[in-house]
Image (cartoon, rainbow, N blue to C red; front, top):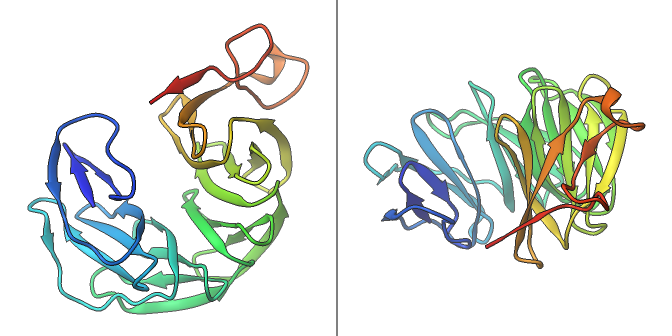
Length: 240
């Protein structure tokens, strides 16, 4: 895994900017990473475990953090939530010692997870839907999206889900999971994040980033986001 400045990146993808501050050994096939305020956590899909790294000095922390087929990972302020793609579940863990608090069934091949301040949202790549759970692991609802959802993020108002199989991003109402719209992006959208103003989508096979700018509903005849800055409404790509 690479750490560039104060940012953390799985080593399967290099840091886009900034000098590499450290290269840290993890397990096999590191795929996702999150930060709990003190430690960085890496999900190692190939070795079925997590790596815990102290951010202040890059030291590896001892402990057994076993999760079958770990993929997406997030922190809710108290617990870690890890997608277990091989068991079709999300695992809640105590970050202090890696103790499993609970394992909760979701859809097929859960790939990504986020926290909206109250609920956990899981993107189920094999089921073409997302699952909403409370912090006790109770399923609140399951909501359809486009094909092969691979990334998920909350922007303070909406849940955004990338679908690598349909080259789209879907916008959901976080209060009830209602689909507001699905919008075209570039090839194989996977990673997605929010910078406080815009949604950013990493398109795996096109080698591009797309900025999707949210607009006010009254500004356009339909609800959702405006992906493009051109007259045709298509996304403006940001090349690597």
